[in-house]
Image (cartoon, rainbow, N blue to C red; front, top):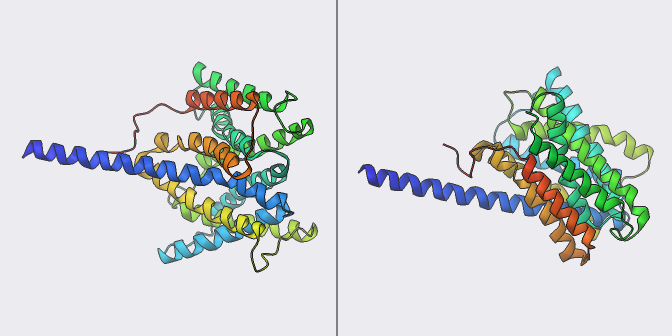
Length: 312
């Protein structure tokens, strides 16, 4: 009976491991598509501020349905409201707007590569605040990430137009904003509130914050019927962001943060692959070299642990 119990437990762990890897792959592939969707929307005339507004509004609406169906209420005390505001700005308003401004000027694959800078910069911020241990290999990983960005921005043959180099800096600025959000979450997250509930509040506050800027700049994007490429791209981005984030949150709780952090590899690679499939992008050797360096840097920075897809 003991042997049968061990076999059953092993089979259960194996199924859980395969399920975790499948979720990691699906979420990463989906999230990587948002760079191409952003390029579709902005190249067809959608204003970046308007696109960001729709992303927050539709995301908040989807999460409202999910959370109210689970009978969860949105905490509105001072601590939560401050958290929503800060993370909404750092995690949605600033980075999404920067990415959408950069998207028409850069290949979708390059946007995907710069997104891999997020965990590298997160480690730098965490190390400066002494939330993470400073280790030589992890510092080398950050250095490789910096070299990868320089390989994209500096050589004249790496981008379609040399003037596009400034937009690489803009995209890295978006990654910096995401990294700052991660540090804020580590320091000030309300411990008793579910992640999706926090995301719901962040989406609502970021939407309200954007409304004045959209009105002043006359950058509202109407979702006119019948929908065209812009409308489908905007709705697709909102749905993919909520879907992928929900899967990421599930992985963190089911398989641990170390395992879930590997999604960065999938998002980076899939961002490049979606650009190849949708736009038939052709990258120079500099770009492919930068991708290899960025993935190597990620491997060095990713925290070591025992997570492998299951958690006991």
